[in-house]
Every structure is written in C-alpha cells, then in structure tokens.
Image 1 (cartoon, rainbow, N blue to C red):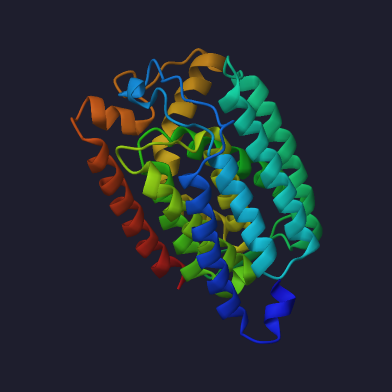
Image 2: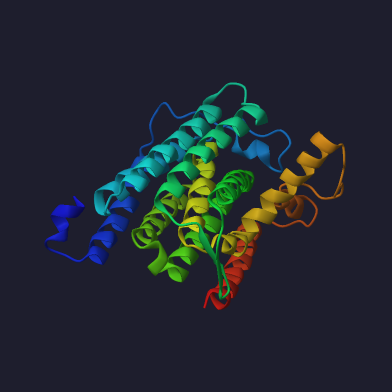
Length: 316
C-alpha cells in the first residue's frame, strides 16, 4: 500500500492516512468486539478491583493487530521492523493467553517469556543499529555485549512497570499517549518512520480510550499493557538517547516500579521496605489520599507532560 501511494502523495500524507485508518479500524473492532475475548474476574486485592468484574478483557489483542496492520500498510517496511512486529505479536499473545487463563500465570513463567523475547529483540536490534548513546552533549559507544545486557534490562523493566500501571480506567493508555507523543516530537529525525508508528499507536490508544475511560466497558489486559511497555523500550533505544526513557516514562516507572522493587527485595532478600505504601502507587493515592480514578488519571498525566517538557530542554 505504501509503495502504491508513494507515487501520488508525500510520506507525511501517507502517514496521516495511516493514523486515520488506525483509529477507525480500532474503533470499529472495539465497537463490535470478538465474541471469544475473555471477561475480567475482578482483582481481589486491588482498590475497586471488583468493579472490573465482567468487563471484556484482553482487547490488547485488537490494539496490537490493528497497530501491526496499519504500520505495515502505510509505512515503509524494513526487515528489522518486521521482526519487531513478530515479537510484538508474540508478546501480545503471551499476555492474551494469561488474560484468558482460568488461573493467572505465575510471575516466573511470565518473567521467562519476557526474558526470551527481550533476548530476541536485542539480537535484532544490535544487528541493525549502532550502540552509541548520548546524554546531554556527551556521546560514547557502549560495547555490544554490555549494550545487549542493558537493553534486556530496559525491556524487562518497561514491560513490567507498564503492566503494573494498568489498574485504573484510562491511566495506562493516557500515560503511554503522552510518552509516545514526546518521543515523536523530541526525536522525529532519529526515529524516522518509527516516529510515524508512534502517531499510529496514539491513534489506536485514543480509539481505545473511547471505551476505557471511566466508567470503562473493556480492558486491554496484559495483552495490551505488556506490548506498550515492550514497544516504548524499543523506541527509547532507537532514539540513541535510551536514558531519556527515565524522564519520558517516569510516571510509569514510579507507579509500577515501586511494587516491583518491594516484591523483589521481600521475595529474594527477605527485606521489607515501604510498608505503609500500597502498590502500585495509583492504589495508594486512591486508598490513602482519597483520589478519584479521574483525579489519578489527570494528575499522573499532568506530571508526565511536565516531565516531557523538561526532557525537551535536556535533549535540546
């Protein structure tokens, strides 16, 4: 499709058609969702977790498929990107099978799948990209083995903090929209066609928010949140400024990361910290501070927007 349209209109115009196509395709697929999608069972320990019971879950399957179709149709395709699409689909499938399972998968099982997909992703990345990174005006080339390891860590962290943040209607999708737009604005030259994939993903998330804003009728589940975290990490590395991820996804990192640190220290080192802080952080502010779900989404998004603006000065 891209090659056909390229003879008549500019790449930017093609990308905009792709954005509109992605929104409409996603909206229609969510408006008439597949009958086989599972229903949420409610979360016993989450704040207001019972309110999710009975909602359609795992629509991340629809979001991911619409993203892959739209980008392959309306953007130039490379071998590297095709591999990413395959890995995105695999990540979505692992999350969807967990969403649909009668008994949730264990953390170790999901962690092993994350590790395998992260290893394959880094193998693909280092075959097509330099390992030069930049912080402020400083550039240096990291040895490939070290970059490989750091990239695996980045992928694993991003997948899991994004997954943990998907606990309030509209929160994960809204924060990811801010982060994706920040990547596009700050690194349009470095990302090239990957910048257009950000816009397509934002369009898909906006279509999803039509159904996920409070009170929601459906949830992306692990099938969506894990894919989002996975792709955000890839984008961070493609920019050549991977450490900027700490700012552009700071709210996701803090919201979901506190719980991961607590669990790791308690499970493996028998160290208990932050006993008075509920995790994820969005549960703490709802339970202990009395924030409504709408307040959580707006306040967290505002913080992330401010941090993205701060990142603009660092990159500039």
